[in-house]
Length: 228
Image (cartoon, rainbow, N blue to C red):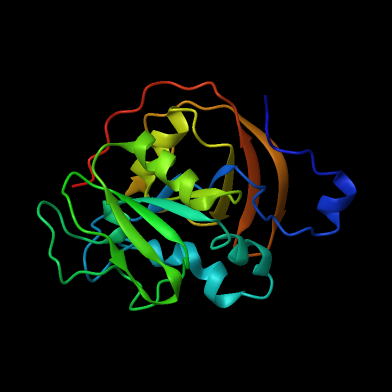
């Protein structure tokens, strides 16, 4: 059964904030029109890859016009991300690395990081607590649901992590923020995934088109994530 409540058209047109419904698994992610959520050659100095910074102009140059979508990015009760989103390293952990976000990351909630290498939990200022999960995507989701309580769980990225959850049929809503640019290469959303999406809502500014979808349970097998 579809757990997403219908949103009346009059409410959507009135600009109701896209706050995740309790218990949903959501993903809110920005991509180029050719499907990339990061540019090529990601590195410590260029974490979103070459050209990837252009994807997020809508957040920094038009925060007021996109305030509901920006608020929704950090409104979940728990988050799941791949190791590549947490940091640039591979293999054994550099224990000095504590994420891209400084001492107070923006999540203010439990964050579950998928990895093949064990690491003790990391508690940050402002309520963000990173846990490092080595036994797979479903285990991470079970733990995230327990931590979130009656709030939503958000799959934060990167592309390989989102693709795994999509093809496993574990995402209820996908919120795409489509920047009017092409990157030509990088980390591609839907790579190896075949999902059916049902449009719920859409709006745009000159820097981004926000489209909200419900995700069907039809999927194909995705290739394994190469996260570390």
